Length: 398
Image (cartoon, rainbow, N blue to C red; front, side, top):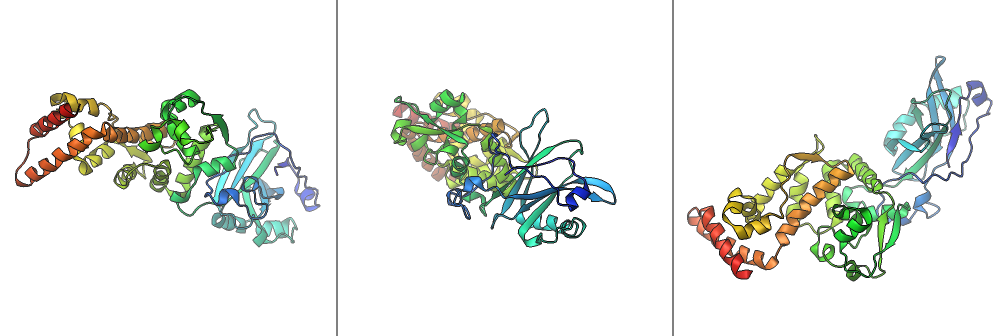
């Protein structure tokens, strides 16, 4: 439960007059991060992963050589939790919502705790506090004339990004609402436009519902009535909660691994395209390169090499109808915001749409490509000839 503290004197603390108050707060529970599907429903003792709030034992001023340094927050270890979050709010501040101030793994917390145990045991006189039973952090961003409220969240996190179950995490933290899909023929994109105000946010619905593949045409283009038997869709109460979880995953596993986990969870990408997308991430800059993705995908697909060639749109009216689906984004973008992640995921998805656009035509294209490859083995084949051959087939199929 949350604990309050005002400016307490050391003499009061030593005498044991340390006031902590439980709060039946009406505030929404802060977002916790990233359980696996199994962990989302199984807690260490209560069986309830949602309520993993370790007890704050006490909060005290940390004074060294008569100088006020900050506040020590001491809480009990929560079984085998792998990570902890520390939340704080200024009770009488202009904005008094809880904000996360720390997110640390248990190993880092053990190192942090070692700095303060002598102070707790010997200076404060709390000799019964065992180092093996608690964690301690120091908050230096405090003012002595303020009243603060703290709360702790314990987390059991997966060992690799591919184990993260975003939908289970959102459900477990009561961050989703159930919405009736109606009797119409809406697919995930049109439903996203109706509910979230933007069809490009359809990936968020896929993150919230395990049986909706964003990249998988078998799911994304079907009417929802054919996919969701109970006729209800789970929708985030706040779309920013998903980005908080994604950014936590990036912190834990690095951007490439986290992005790979997200693409896998969204379902439907071939391994080749997934690898190309992940390799388009610059870990140091924290960005996704549209140019690298387009360059690399041409190396594995002559279809995209033809479609992305400027001479195709100039020489082939038929292929230009397909190439217009392919996005023209250039440069790079971060993936740390909802807007940018949406842009990157829809960029990739448009390539998937282009690849599956008029499957009959692409089957014919593959036949032509095979012939072209055989001819290329002996001599170079002009692009103009390839375009002409493709045009003839596409017009015939049309």
